[in-house]
Length: 235
Image (cartoon, rainbow, N blue to C red; front, top):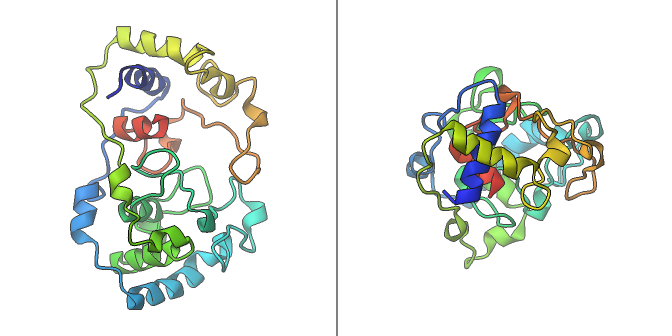
């Protein structure tokens, strides 16, 4: 892991009240890639049926995040037409892999209106989850570009350093240093999402958003407070 990011990562995880978790079993990139079916027009068509029944109410018929209940959700549902995804293993500004989208659809996003379609009450069969992944991709034309390969943009991670009180303190310095991390401005001194600029942030669509409460480890979105996931977010 990159030095400064690794230090900052340790400080952030120290704010939480739960241990760092590993990627849920069965959801790693290599595992999912082995199980992923080949995308075909037939599967995309089946995914459209699943999407209209399960997803369109929030994300909208056109995939633009303007479904009938979108105005009542915070944060707003994702607009798939822009190709901008928060949860991914690719670099900032790059589109996600199929496995990234599958994980988000399956595991949901705790603290938002996005349920876990791969688990619990709303569980869908895995074949339907892949179908809806393929259909979601149809909303953004770059996915259809034969030269587009998100796997070339994967974030490369080395092994993290062993956690220590010294590294956590060094990470805290970056967290509060306005010239480097400046995390404290939004996330606050205790990581509770109550920094002095917490109420001023907006997303890519100019909708208001609130900083994450880093002290509530159970609310970390997507894979949870794993070392790998927080590192990817910072990257």
